[in-house]
Image (cartoon, rainbow, N blue to C red):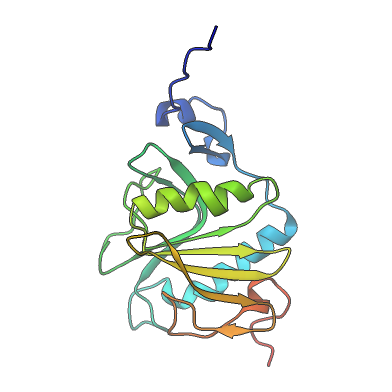
Length: 194
């Protein structure tokens, strides 16, 4: 006899847990977000530092024009709720800082740092939902191999528009106004080093 189909997890199911901050809803299931390794945490910190010139009003000490958050929960129309490592919203599209939990406005940029045993979520599950939501930019950072993949939305799927590894410098959209040293994103060098 076949088991009855389980109903997809909901936002209310997520809230019923003691610590919903470490949980996501992926494919209708409540999934515990991988505990960040020191390498993961350092990469997240370095990415926040690298994108900081954008995380302000335009024209104030750098390019500006974005709201950028780390470990931010975002709800999508298919019932998915992701705790993105980093996500950003253009201020010209979202003039008031998002404050609800989870944020229910589609981000303009999402970045995930690959965690062991969560590769499928970062490379398959999340990109499908982000594509359906028309998230314009999706980055994947792979800290073990020190690789940055920059994806851009297109009608057929997210297309890789830039690949870079440690030792390279890139102007990665949507932040092409500044150069990013990929090694610095993974903590291999300080941003002030020449």
